[in-house]
Length: 443
Image (cartoon, rainbow, N blue to C red; front, side, top):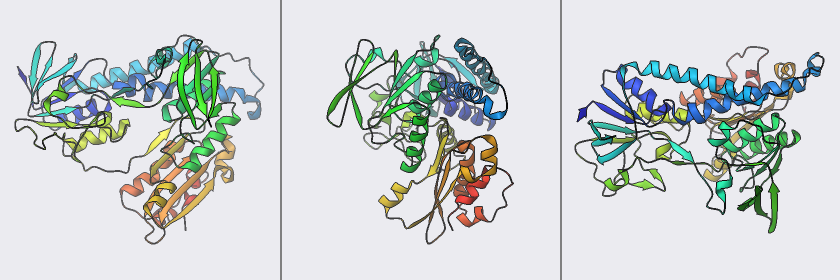
């Protein structure tokens, strides 16, 4: 049996970054990964889709070349080259991850729990006084007839030809990113979303703004629709407002969220689950059904597998919490890399109303910003929410160019406990998109 100070199962952002951090603090670390280092984020998620987003952005810029003083060029999309570029970027980053793990004992294989303190991989047993489960998540599927006719978010990243039409089931982050990308590539896109608005976790005003922007780009978005089944074609059968309708497309993407991947054998050890996710305490320690954790090992679960926040950067933060290097925070920005981008941090206006918070709200449009107009990016809105009495920053919501970058200023201020006045009293460079955030600070 091989022993180490720490075992980590899963080499996604939460797993490998925690492994590197632990090794830097002098721990002997065994990192077990069944596939490739980098996890979903690098190989089938964040990075892969961002590579496609960049190609989509170039496609849209070329389509508008005349507006910038260039004669229309005969630019033709070479989809295989787009996918090759994506694979090349992933390969480079994967090599970088392997370099970072030089001081970590990396084991390739499927981990299975024999006891809370013993993990088996291909017949070899490993043990440690601390074990971190960082096994991530996999695409979820609706329990409907012929769902196997749909592509998952993993499979669509392996296409070698571009479909002429695409129906996306699900208007969340994953679905809207793919819808935006494929529409930019000239694909006829229809989105079918169960909720009354796309991006359900986002501020309703921001989500509506994105929906209207995407509709202007030709994306057909159907909300309040329940998908019933998939038929040969493929054809998506759904109901909306009591009426049965269909969408036929060359390809169908099922993008209805993700579900935790739990290591084999763990459920037999009395671990407590919250739906399908491993239930954890605020220090990321695993909860047990009888309330009594095993005495010979500390079990942790970080990232998607604990279901708290399915974002790569949340997994990294969870890992630091598990190592005792930081405290848990709920100030976690999130972004959607559509065109235009959307980003948020903190409470939405709807949540503030639900909690009975007395708030003040400031808004500013990109159209009034010189840099945005010079960039050709006038479509955008920044919305900042603060407590009306204490001036505490409660949230920021953005739809517009570089939203994912802009929201970080408010996230940093919120984490530091700064007031809204701290932003409004800070000199912002001109001309920059950051001035839109400044203009949105409520007085």
